[in-house]
Length: 193
Image 1: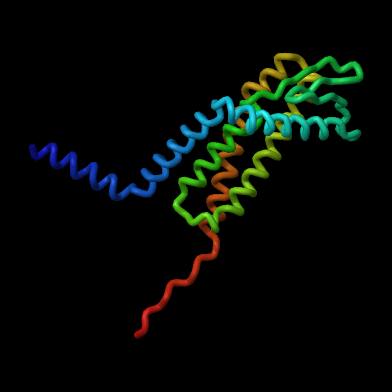
Image 2: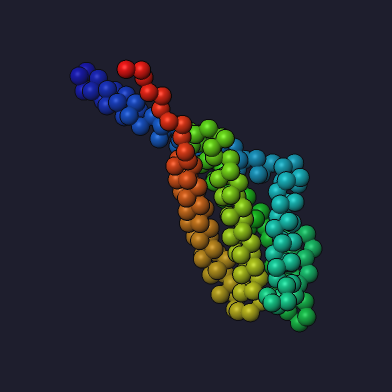
């Protein structure tokens, strides 16, 4: 009986001591779960996810078509097709559009117990930076697919960029979260002597 009380006390002390961390993890997991479930909803997929994917594909196509980049292509929906003798064709799918990483990033920011007025700018900056990196990913994959072997493309698509995006997402979150927590806070009110 004493052992059960001791265990209960330890759990209560742990929960009390790590309450902010526990709250962060629970909020984060719920939002990620709901966000991922929402992505698989057909209405959301058709009206939100597909247009985001098409926009990411369009931007990548415009970058690749710049004369100094030199990879002319045609974009139709979520497909990039090489032109001028380049037979490479690449489809940008739901898991290549940055939506999942954006959900994780947003969930982490929502879970931080800081007022939105202090974090909204950094959330926006993080989204912009992340999608810039994702565009670099799409452009580099088209260039690699057009110029190198299928094995090289597969390595960069399935390994390099997967790990890189996880690390970049975490890095952007940590940087932005650090900046948010260091923002100027009001000075504490001094009590009259």
